[in-house]
Image (cartoon, rainbow, N blue to C red; front, side, top):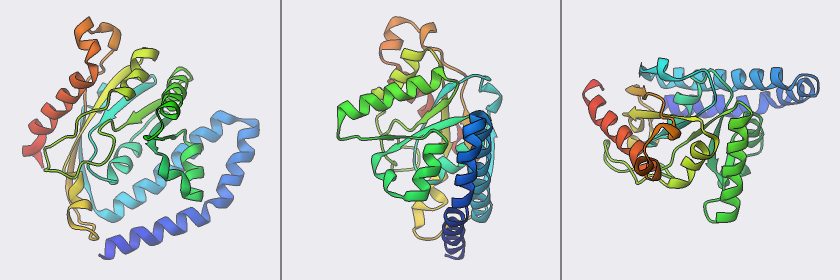
Length: 244
């Protein structure tokens, strides 16, 4: 419970004390948008790393060398709020995450999310959802990676279970031609979700798969690319279960 309280206090202070930083970042962006983007990325990553340090989480990372130095579509399984912190804190390039529309209500947090190219998906409005996908494709073409958890929500089932992947996110790769990088995560729900509201020290495994270029797949695999990537992640989390 102590860790949870520390995280809440830090998050509140971060969101309040970085309001002037957002103003400075806005001014920097008027003269050098790229410098603003990189500094915003590092500031958010710093905050995430502090929170992860408070949790006491120990992370084993496999295959990070598989990520090419180009904009990619990260696809991961999703069991914890901490999945975002664990993966975003490791991003080397500008990377936007696709979040649910409801996240837009959180003022300073929303401002920081938009500053680092996060997009908000309205799951109840297909037309708006398509606009989000088109914006993500544009980001890829501008050199910004995108991360999506295509289960659509956090999976609260058994540790090695997964919800079916929704296909819409994969259009970001098939339409832009970028590589898909599978992210397979084990034991992240043990940080928080498995014993709310306690935050516990634990060991998590993150494995980055080899890049998948849609144009290099045969027609049938490309048509069912969501199932293809889902199976890769499923096999990987089963393989890594013994490492936790």
